[in-house]
Image: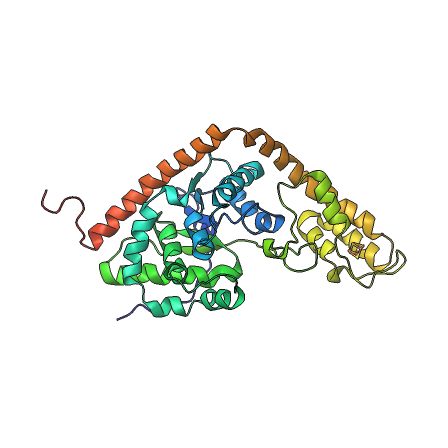
Length: 356
Ligand code: SF4
């Protein structure tokens, strides 16, 4: 009997801690494609949560360079720079290699082996019904995405997660369907070969949708981002010229904060009390847009100025960056090898030399 897709249950490791008993260790794994410098949307959507999670759980965070090839296989000239920039942004924002394992996916070849094994058991129909497969093919015309690698990227994603026997994966609501395919593959593994790896649960994390300078979703492809590595001058110039409520033409015109992308950013960077004041001031024309933007700039700069200082310290230290990735890969490899040994045994594959 084929395992059937089950509905996803949302759980938090916190809920599982039994009172008065030893707190179980929870392992979390997550990765991001190195598609360029991180922007505020990436920070709010992932990094902010990771920085919090590293203090509470055993975390594996990886730069998903093989995943980047699934859509950008034709032009790899920027890949190394993108990896370096992403690592710098992670560290500058506060991801701490002393608290979590940070590594590069392609440094741990076990990802490729588990990807191959899982590929053997994953029905093509599961991959064809993946909504992003069709969506991205329709949206991205400049590249040919009718490739084996792009169709199979959910299998690689499953390998990335199952390789660390992670019990939880931090996801936003919109990413739940992606994790569900990993869970289906884990169930199929269980069905065919018996218990090998846990079926990971989603750890639902807040992922507010940040709007960009032009009012559309903040995205590199729209060229409307504030980047973590932008200078203070660039950040101010971007905020100063940012779109506002189009109805607020003159200083004396009342506005609607809900129609303004500046107010959307206040939602993530300004505290409740100040936000209420701005809301009222905007609706009554009591505050001008430049003053409103200055408050936002100051709040964003609180985060970015310290990230900028950290980045400057790290930037020239190539040896340190290299050793962080090396140590991370070594840690990751140890766990990955254990998992592959379990999976190979369950699949009755030869462990070493068949006749040795
Ligand atoms: S006052 Fe602020 S929230 Fe209102 S329109 Fe101007 S920038 Fe937007």
